[in-house]
Length: 166
Image 1 (tube, rainbow, N blue to C red):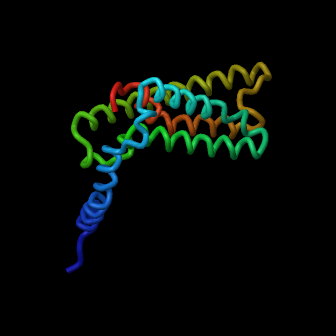
Image 2: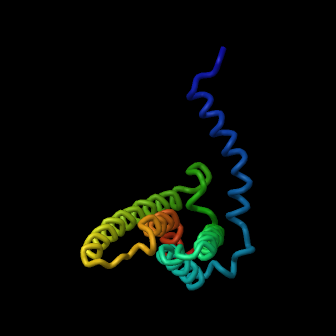
Image 3: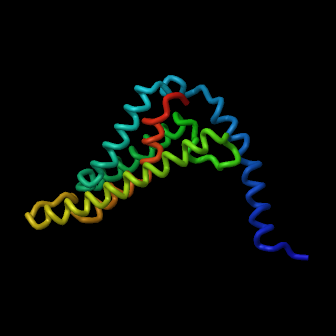
């Protein structure tokens, strides 16, 4: 008898959790990034990542600058994720209830901030566009790209700012 779709999904989920459990344990007890886990360093890395994301439209003027900015965002995001012990990326079954509740709260607030920022940016772009001033670099897609990177990394940035101990 063939398995139903739900049974297949449950089986795949169980396999994934079995494979991720050692990774989660490794992240929880990793000491390689202990020097970067101080609140001041985490906030500095978060501000650096946020600044790089928000200045993305102006780095896109030159192709090499754009590629370097994207690589910088990926590198800083990966480092900050490791410093945060990967709590924002782990499945619910592998973290405790306190961290799960805190993570969900941070996701909720970060997307609230992202939506507010998006509406503010669009409103400002409309007002500035009427005045003949552009906020988007050389192409409107560049400004959208900067906002996309910011929204993508915002939960990790907010986790670094709001968590006192990791």
